[in-house]
Every structure is written in structure tokens, then in C-alpha cells.
Image (cartoon, rainbow, N blue to C red; front, top):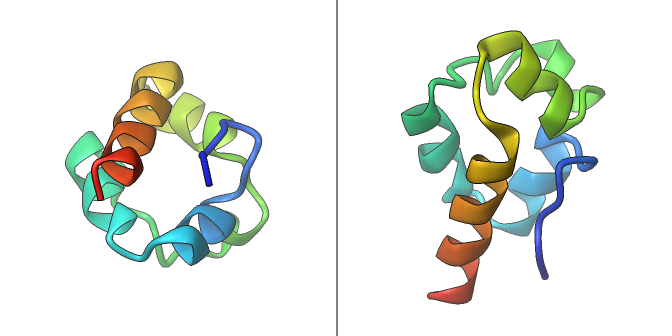
Length: 66
């Protein structure tokens, strides 16, 4: 499965909980926040000033190499 920027953080973590480490490293320290359940990865990246496309690439590369 691949990740896209329209998925919620909750959906992404259901793919692989280890992705939480990548999100934290990118500066997204709010994984337990209620917004993580309804906010897309793109929306969360915008709030935190994170390059969403680069993060999606990093996550998908991580999943590909598992």
C-alpha cells in the first residue's frame, strides 16, 4: 500500500504504526491530537510548515523498503 497526502494521519498509522517515528522526525509531534483523526496529511503538514510531498515520498520509501 502507498500513502498519499489526502489520507488522515489515523489512516496512515493503520498502515504501519512505525510511520509515527517518521512523522515525529518531520516535526509532527501531535499524533495523539484529536485533529489527527479527521485532518489529512496535507492539512497537518500545512499547519506545521512541513513539505508534504517530501514527507509522502519518505513514508512511501520506508514502506517500500520493509
